[in-house]
Length: 115
Image 1 (cartoon, rainbow, N blue to C red):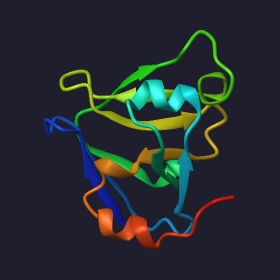
Image 2 (cartoon, one colour; image 1 turned 90 degrees about the vertical axis):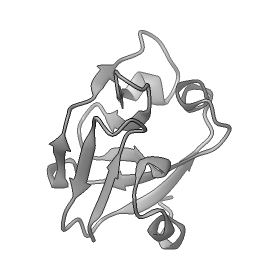
Image 3 (cartoon, rainbow, N blue to C red; image 1 turned 135 degrees about the vertical axis):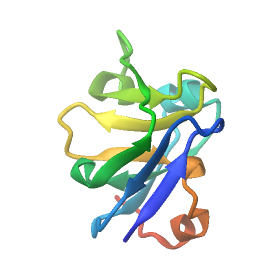
């Protein structure tokens, strides 16, 4: 499966090519709520080796404390427009793209959910 996406201002563009293990994950932990400003956040989990930045590069944020997502990962966002792009697990087993930054949003609805 192939996906593409971008931040709000378009300074960052990326694509995910030939990833056969893309799944949807929804999170409503307090840390994800603070990071995104949303109550429940749909993510698309991908293999990091399948991600390529076509334009720009995001800024990385690692929280100093936290219970769940902040404790186990770091966030990438656009330094220009502030769009949150993804959460990256510290051990790099997978990255989770925020579903709203994807160009193929209709695909997200049909993806299997990761348990």
